Image (cartoon, rainbow, N blue to C red):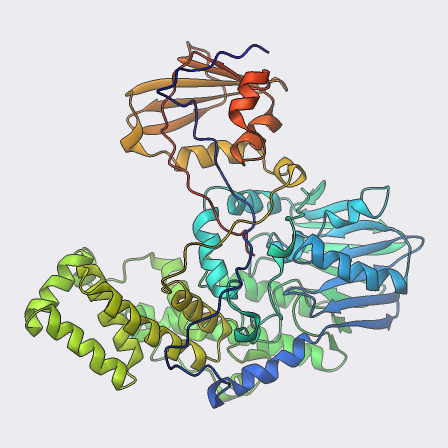
Length: 583
């Protein structure tokens, strides 16, 4: 292909979509006289770490042997032995972790892996799958719900930067290892230790799928809960249930603070009812240890009842006209639920769940007219400062709050002073103390890690979370539709130099895509047939490689791998490096 280079005053495209994994930087939290030591409020969380001691647990079930790898990362990985072949349920956090797990599995049974089943789209269940391509000639069948790849592409694509940032905070992947007790449902997140190894599913289903692999009778059922694409695996001959993330030994994440689509809480309850109806004798969850025998029915029942209780009482109080901030103070779990070791708030919390349930039914507006169109953040801060006698008085109140260990109030006051840009270094130092104080005392690891990481980000030497290695194999799994969705949402309207510009992409596969720049939006079309202001001819892979930084665009144009006509196209896509892809 011929390549016509544009003139020196312009650049063809912002070829820098970085949407892969970030490394965990080795940065220590500056203490600022705050002693980070185990204290009474986190003793139960420390005890909870026993759930994640690294081990392989094996069970001889009525249908054959099942092995579960615990403590290698966040999610468990499960191997079911079959005739001359095995199946893997959930492929772990990373290729690095999958290698460790399979080294142990192979000692127990060296037969090839015939299939990998994803219980849902989260990276701690999918990112290790590619490892199995490197250790055997035959590619395993990749089985998942029909919407799994849709949700995966969404995470890899348009919301990746913000989900990555918030996930890094929530899982504490940027914190020193000694500051992370655990992450509630596992020991630690390891996705940054190797390139992500997600493989697209090649076998999918809608409601249920029954099949036999290596003599193993497998039943898969769509079971919405922690994710909309969640499934559970039922092995009738083994009397064994693999529930994915719909039950684990902690209060469920009915909402996750890293951010997620609304979780169908009553759908979760119904999924647990479906599991109960099967009368399993073994449960191999994707997090925490197996549940065996007589405890299963009572545990599943109590778990589903806890979820329904929070749902029903939230809706009851919502219908009585209470706001979310009032409801969270009014709901208290029954003693029978509070006392259950399966419902300690080491992952989700009742308070966060209430807000999510409210939002799921009524949206973000809580009904209070004072909060429909509140003052802009800076204006509110200015008026508060004026009320108390000026910014210095507000700073004095912040210092008093810190000295009095009223740290939540200190955080809220620091928000106002940051909005006012008043004595930023001093305010940040006080905010750091508040974040650290709350963080080290939190028995909920999501909150603990989020606060301690937010404190880390206030350090003067902190820049950003580094970007991990990207590979061609990983880029291949990103769909071309995802690429164009990313381009659309990264358009910087201030940089559009022409009100109407049509950019046509012609791929060697025969696919065509068009970006129509108009009214400062990038409209994507698959069937445009008019004239093009700019025409780009290349392969889908070359475009994805260029946009991910694995192919030098200038060299690709010079070599003819990318053909660009005509010669001028201004930078209009404001694309900053994304961070890690976290489950």
